[in-house]
Amino acid sequence: MATISNLFVDAGATYSNIITVSASNGQALDLTGYTVASQMRKSYSSSTVFVFTASVYAAQTGKIRLQLTPQQSEAIPAGRWLYDVEITSPSGTKTRVVEGIVTVTPQITQI
Image (cartoon, rainbow, N blue to C red; front, side):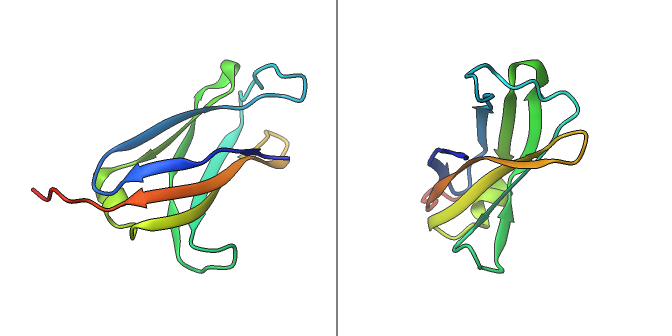
């Protein structure tokens, strides 16, 4: 079962977040050779999707990084979105490791 973690994104700003993936024994999962994907949608069945740039940040310590550029975060309408993070092992096994709500706050300063 995926861990629940809610995120907050400021529209128009750079976003970066590090997530640590743990094995069932509580130790950091070695992500060597794994790939990562992460999307946000308004609802589970929504066809509108925004994609985090997701990557393995520090494989041996189980760290994943989610990122958005200012242009990417600015394109997301303010409000609440659902997201998840899936990892794929070198053998092709997919696992959802994190899920939750992303709250996007609107940009005020526009320069």
